[in-house]
Image (cartoon, rainbow, N blue to C red; front, side, top):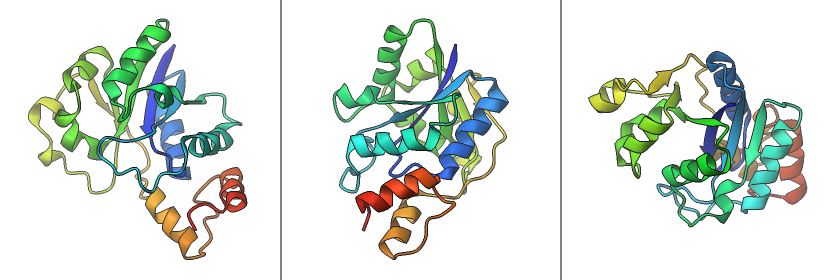
Length: 194
């Protein structure tokens, strides 16, 4: 099975994530997209993160009616901070019948050469890139920009961020249509991000 891995904090998961995952799956003929909920991104502070379990639960709620989308907590039991190359190696060992490909926003290409063992990710798995706002192709290293294992796909340009959603909640502004209804209900019931 061809599986696309969409890594993120999902703090919270929003409609932009869902649209990108579903669109990328359709354009690339992936069998499934797995949302890999990351406990800690090595390039981000973990101060504002909700618990791993709550972020995982929000992804479950958001995708429970789409059988082509799955959620994974694989990184919860791995050393922190977690690195993509290590997660890929673990998944490859655990699911040898699957072929895993990364799904990344175009903004990640600018610093991809700084990722741990990025050459191994390219040679073993490949990357599917979707467009992000303020994407500047000229600032990406040639070796990355023109690599045969990197495929650009047409997808809606989504300028929705979890930061914006958290800010709306703090200001008592509705987040309806920014997140799935079940996620909105969960956030409200738990009084998150206030």
